[in-house]
Image (tube, rainbow, N blue to C red; front, side, top):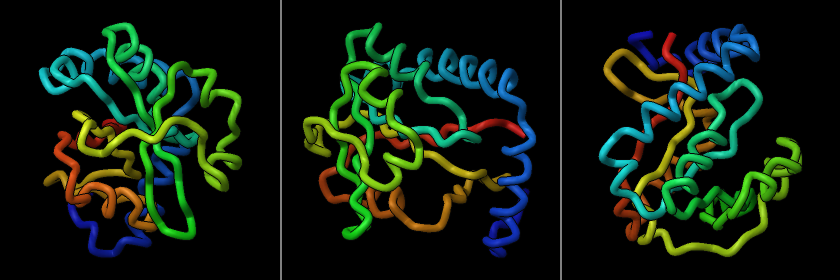
Length: 165
């Protein structure tokens, strides 16, 4: 999609594409994306990687977290403060820290963990419903990552991670 100016229409378009991807395809594409990402200099040079907690139709970031731990990196995920409309990166040490948490639970309450200073993050994986042909990101419309990415202390490389249509 080249034009994201009509955000409600663009969101509906991208949601319909994401919902049409079957679970086997989603799993294999997520695995391949993690492999490709782990080969980039940005990933290889990062000591601390921030993943997003994937919603059902999104690319699964668990393989990225596993690759990071295997490479000796620390991993953080966002703790959501709905009232403050803010993300706080908290360290996760295993997938069990987040696997048992339903999407509804972490959307409502966030995850628990040791908060990590934003300045220590080297690579931030950013979710999106989709991207325009010129690379503009379309999120879900609440601005959490838009605000997070302009935090004064954040020096990390931001990397959009999604499926290719």
